[in-house]
Length: 329
Image (cartoon, rainbow, N blue to C red; front, side, top):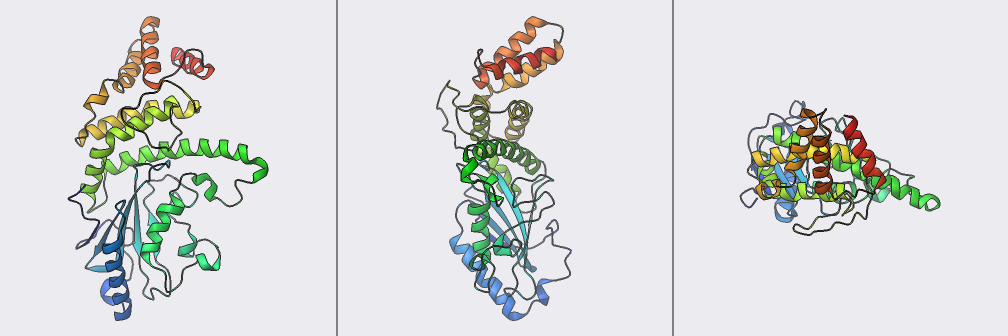
């Protein structure tokens, strides 16, 4: 992604969530305009490599940011887009932020309608020192979204969760929540590939072209239990052990999503051809099951391929249940 700038000022905006707002950039007071432009400079000089920003020369009151999900989280290698609007009395009032959710809730702080709940935006009742002040900046907002919201255990972002009395139960629930988040993360990837946000098409295509192999490898490792859901995956590492249990629902969703992800990544030029030798067994196997419903031998071969891909063990009760489900279909 070397050719895609971390920060850039562009012209023309049509799909920004706040483009229809009454406020126009030319109507901002000079002091507000100067303050926003100073923040542009801060962003240009200090953005981490995982955050990309576009500002609009003809609409200084608008900004769009993309954040890459960090390693070690269920947002790993996902792309998350936020549209930002600066009010006319900025920075007396915080900016308004909209999350491109595609109708899914990937975090207790990120609602399916795009609402972002964060103390720094005054959309959550946090401590006074966590609230917006005239010294706060949009740079701090972006870092907070990345570090505090898109974190390793987002289930605990909801206040009241994680009491010491039920710590083990909370951890199990958190693990299940991470499975759900990873599934939605994968779906978000496909939505973005289908319709990337304006001015970010190159970023979306190039990111998933470069990371496609790692993302699908992560899907396999998570389903096989080699790695906890959300943890990074090392390409080329082999392990037949299933140290972590995942739900049947998660396995089923990955069976459905992985072939689609492969197709999308391949369509953007991702180097997944060497990986297809194994994951495409998923597609082949499901096709065999559909075409040979009455052929018990064909179904058994399909199940065997699935078990090889995901590292499932024959003696595992959960795997037996999955095998029986496929047979009944």
